[in-house]
View 1 (tube, rainbow, N blue to C red):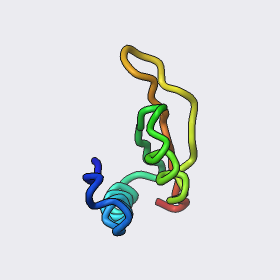
View 2 (tube, helix red, strand yellow; view 1 turned 90 degrees about the horizontal axis):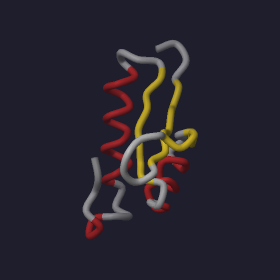
View 3 (tube, helix red, strand yellow; view 1 turned 120 degrees about the vertical axis):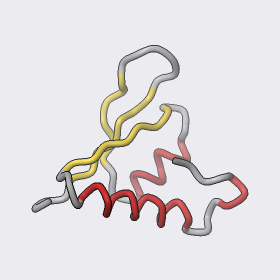
View 4 (tube, rainbow, N blue to C red; view 1 turned 90 degrees about the vertical axis):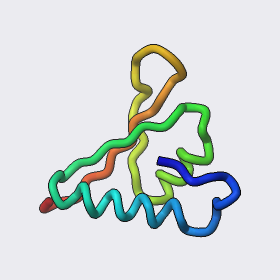
Length: 74
């Protein structure tokens, strides 16, 4: 999921992420996402939204990081 650069800083990404979180937390207590290691803007966004930065993911292609968020009682 991503928001076009021309629409950044309007709250659209936060709304999309919040909707995804609400939908997923209805069924799961932990959710995960990935972003590329060199995507500083995305990493900052997710951390501002409360996501926890994890270790680099192994595999082919560009380095990616996993982020997690937990919600108690889900």
